[in-house]
Image (cartoon, rainbow, N blue to C red; front, side):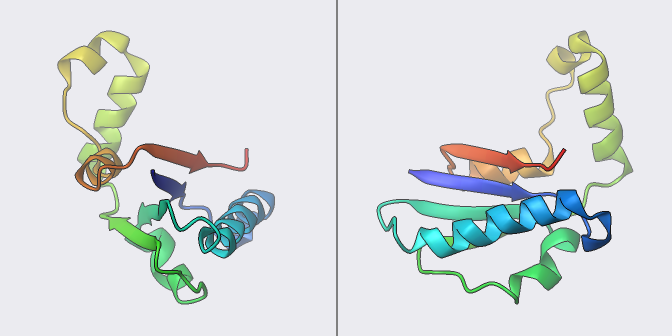
Length: 115
């Protein structure tokens, strides 16, 4: 199984939300080596993961997938699709993380959030 975990843009200054994500992500990295039958992927934007990756020790079945930071168009598109259900049928564009997940054929993506 190909499992993704999304690490959001939470900064350490936020406190509890960051601590929650950090602990889950570090546990995933530690445990990935015990599940060689699965492939694990940590997804995030380059701004959320670039500095963080160097502090982790990935195993052979753990990879990092970076997407571009959402621009104004991406954020507006998501806001419209979430706010108006009819627009989600009309606006067929996929967000950067959805594209990344489909491109890498992930079976499951867990959005780790602390709130």
